[in-house]
Image 1 (cartoon, rainbow, N blue to C red):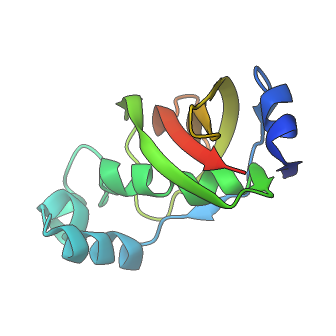
Image 2 (cartoon, helix red, strand yellow):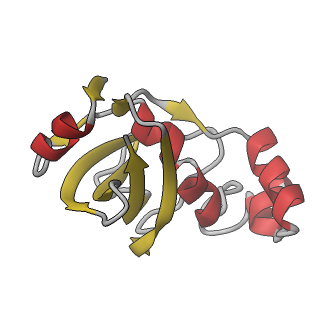
Length: 151
């Protein structure tokens, strides 16, 4: 994991790929907890017995669960130090090419695609994140993630 300290280091990182980060296991407890938190109890996520006969062969993580792990996964690939504050600003795009089966391990690769100076002194970053799925040639998630950092 690489640490980018200060605004200048972030500006200089445009075009660089960071990662891969550390592997993270998505277990049934996390899937069930996400289902409870979001009220999305679709059987493909929470019923292992029924999901075993699905095309996936097991329960799968919610796509939005995978997406919600971007901060953790990205921070194991690269980290920003020295900012007073950082906030999510949104997503330009997101896709889930491959489902994350229960027990799978995922990790991220992050490319800082763009850094824009904001009028209030902050930086807006567009980061391209690919969430890799162990043993798959397809990613579990690809996202263009927009964040703002204030130094």
